[in-house]
Length: 79
Image (cartoon, rainbow, N blue to C red):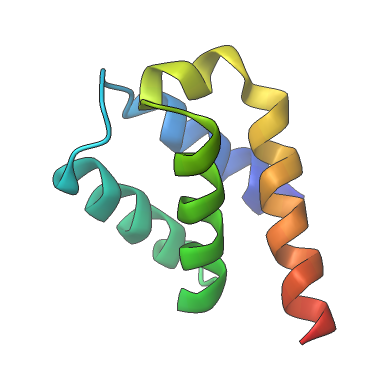
């Protein structure tokens, strides 16, 4: 849970207006720094991109991001 909160904080801090390649790369780098598997990070970024058009939208829906991250953790456990 501590990692989820840290990751959410990092995403919010790096907020900008749209999903660019740079934003995606930064999201993935931050995710991988938390020692999560690359597959988990891929799951998280895909779910976030489907739900939000930009990093700035994430800041408004902080609790939902935690739910998305938990979904990816649960999916990883079932595989």
